[in-house]
Length: 315
Image (cartoon, rainbow, N blue to C red):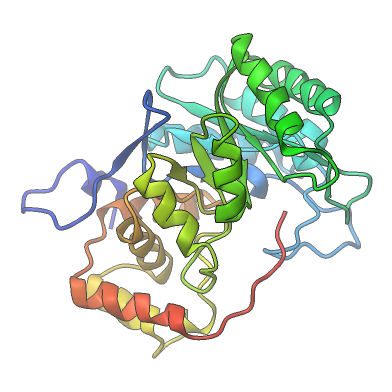
């Protein structure tokens, strides 16, 4: 299977739509790229998929630049990063690889988490800190306006009005186009919407971890993009004889592609942002846009959500 299948399909397609418009004016293909994987760990601290230190720039910088450029060549319209990934070096890497950015490319970043050490992710929503971090992100990304700025975590020590107010002031000044949130509940999303328009929510969600179903359904009903991070986690379901592996075999796809294709069917609001440091895996992930699943196959995969699963912590 090749990515070119997305553009050249002779038969009527049962696939969901491949483009979503964020905030009413940012059309993006419905599989983006999460750049967090283009970071390195500080030696002895273990780097696991759900608890990566995300502390240093990548060991092979040129390989990371090549991957980012390949992503854009393959049609990626949305690249997700954060000021806390490698202490800002992830944003600098994206700018080095891709600036000046193509007109269609949306770079979304996040602010609101401090990194005192490799193992610490501390929500910090003081307005002066958020403004400082946004200004630094603008410099590192080499842009005058951030298309989508997401609050990385809500700080329970700071009134939500103050946190979102800082982002709204940046928006009023033309430094931010749209505001989003990350890892929020439905109640928190509704509270935020009462303060300012919310264009996106970036929460953990995948076949094995589905505790944000209510947020997804609300987002779809209110024109909010839902960007699931760690979207390919499948657990034992991807092992030979498992449900994902079986459906993948039937669909002529890989388990990872099948998991992503299920997400695209799950809701028209979803834009998965799988991350990888491998060009081969990047190409595999993006080819999921061409995978077709029957209603019966989607039902089998959806039924997995009724089974218990662990909820890993994530940055």
